[in-house]
Image (tube, rainbow over all chains, first blue to last red; front, side, top):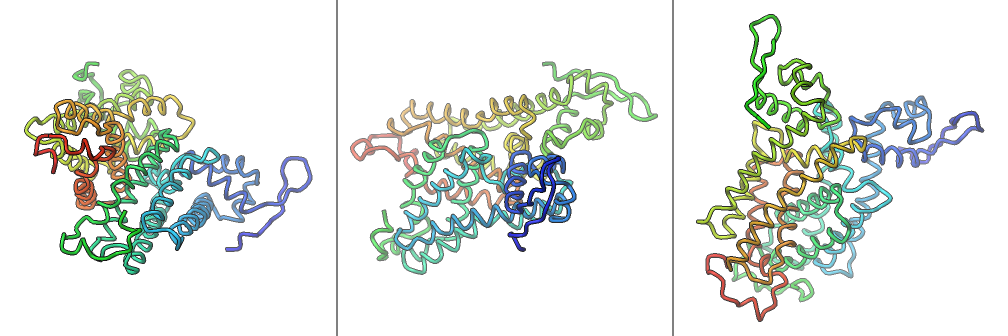
Length: 228
Length: 228
């Protein structure tokens, strides 16, 4: 989709105002995030974006189309950010994981945005009458777990994690912590409180990557920086 | 509140039907749980409970009153269940924690109820226009963390956990895992998948209770059953 598309629109009696698709998406994203899909009306979206209803219809089809586009924008933005942190070749697997989790803590408590993860918040808020949106969210729900799995697997292949470490279990566990952090953020937890959870997690890291690794293989030579 | 109150009501053309307050609350709870507070209308509640609107108004005041009563019923039921597992004097602190977490996994994936935790699901779904309900939920949101804190502190006082173990951090970490499990359950995770997270957590237990405990005190004599 062309995200640079700009369509003319009119706001009140003033001069014509250009329709900024990305800006409208950011504003729609925030409204959906704060109130959920079902509780957000087209009127709310018109008010938040400053665009007229026909402009939104022409651009996104309907409320569902606008929601889909907003969700895609959220994932693209935050997946890129996460992937960049995990892909840092200067960091050990533990350090990259910690950077990623602390960035999650910062993101979930960013005062300029609603708290928590957009996908988690809107999924939880979804009425069972919105089946199509639920399906779409479910398909995207695993983007964080998949990102972590790819990262951990590549580090394991590089010999930075014991060969017996169960990557899928580890990725699911880290994702569970992230999801819990989203719930806490939505409930008012501060960045410091989420950081404290990350500190606990990282204190467990040496034990975590060795779960299921039998003593005879636990001593396998892996780069020193990854053991601690 | 008297939960045994029964008021007569009429359903269709048939004979008068007694109004069963607890049954109505269970049905209302399920509807709120599935759809969220905002997306649930009084019509939905009338349909689900089989009661007439005036009966619901007389009994609970309004939708918010009914939601409050349903939330209280949920907490009373599941807090009792959790407390009983944690209070089992035959179990080590690790075993009682594991039983509690596995029961959470079972509860969150109970096929007779909506998935996940009622409080977490409805909090996440709450529109910011429902301030009073949000406040009420926030006040009740910490019941699981408080329950875990009380349990861990009593076991620490009994010498079953190192004196230096930070109980508050430990309770927050366990709560975070529970919250993540609720998100996963809502997203379709099976009981086995949640159990696997609990297994990972319990594999980390010896390291978890020793976080922050310096080597000189880590060797303090605590009952053997609590070390593993």
